Image (cartoon, helix red, strand yellow):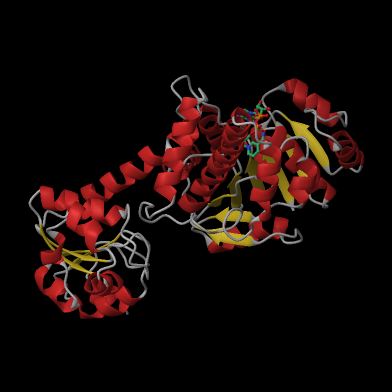
Length: 435
Ligand SMILES: NC(=O)c1ccc[n+]([C@@H]2O[C@H](COP(=O)([O-])OP(=O)(O)OC[C@H]3O[C@@H](n4cnc5c(N)ncnc54)[C@H](O)[C@@H]3O)[C@@H](O)[C@H]2O)c1
């Protein structure tokens, strides 16, 4: 394939060298003439192990050239990969000026081009940037329509500096976000030989995936550092603690706990995070990440309350009040916080939770409820139909698959709020959603 690559920085020059090595004919484009000259002399414009050799080989075989002319690059390629920088502005917002500029330049090239062209954004851009910035800028400067005269997609890059060539060849995944099936298929061909899952998705999801990854990686680093700080403050070997932590592939380094849903609760997580951060404060260790866990959880409970209030209905049904399905443990259940607050605000509630109702009969949580929410007895029912009869809004409070079945009895006037991610579309009458 003939490919032009805009931006010969870390991502662009590695992509250019690897694609040329794979047999494609690559034209690198940069506004900085020194980078263009270096590439044409067979030198890497960045410091990256192994890249000099790759670029030298590709240039000597005539598979890689570089230019400052974007029009020449667009006219002599079928696909443009955009790898320009997306730095922070002073206030932290995303600076899209290089993206805008490169889109205008590619658009100018497309204005005079007859053949279909594909634009692949590899720069990291916030969700919405493709539709609000990239596509309008190219359409405006080219006078052509996306999906008709040119195809567009986003293909985020996951390489890490210093191991960039290895990472390019061994990515964790290949993500192609596009609303244009033919374009996505052509872009996928560039990477089909790589040993990684190839994921085709929407433009917005692909944009969000890259930020989710980087936020997670940053959280991991800070988490490990804060655990290390706390361990050394109490004279424990943090490296050994994390060695053991990492050996747990079931709960720690695993998909567990990593789905958007409702707040955490129960008899362990809240009290243990509280004790750990209390100890840190006592020892004078400032651990902002660990300190932010409980406030973040509280915020999630508050958001859920807002969501219920936003429906504008006073009669609420709740399915599931224990912190987790199939347990009767109500200690620090976040759903009880929701019940408490809705009751305080004068909402009328009916609650169904088969595990908890049963335990109340046998008295397991009696003392806890008597002390904290004595009025809850009048709200609890053993019959889910009573909840549906009473409620305008039905809130799913824990991940019991059984509720999906029960919601087949719901009627079109019911508004369902699935707080836990059971897969019931929010705000939709569930008789349809549960099928
Ligand atoms: N560096 C990384 O490890 C890495 C990894 C994954 C993703 N990313 C993302 O990839 C993007 C590029 O990052 P980078 O580190 O390679 O950036 P960089 O700053 O090293 O390189 C960007 C290059 O684009 C050039 N450029 C700017 N405007 C141009 C234009 N109109 N035409 C042609 N060239 C132009 C600049 O001169 C520069 O050489 C960013 O969005 C970044 O967030 C970076």
